[in-house]
Length: 136
Image (tube, rainbow, N blue to C red):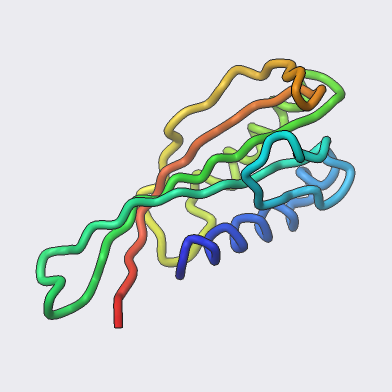
């Protein structure tokens, strides 16, 4: 599974959650990188990773990757709504929502604050996890 497949899987998990749909008023979960184009209310996902060949790479062609998901939540209503969305995202993320991954951990969480650039309350959470890729 590649990082774009991981993004798609996480997006689908969040879009399918009834609690998140209620808070967002619909399936407003997007993959994106530009904050200026953020739709409100929404959740925007980004991903980065770093891979290293494992011992025995020449024979097995296996690389282990450390992935980082950045999840940015934005609402115009209240700080409390943004915090409730973040709590639900946390409940979905910590068991490790993507198959063939392991070692999920919360790396950081921002305070919920009003962001003038998008006119919304925003909160950002980062999660790390591990996965393997076998090269052909």
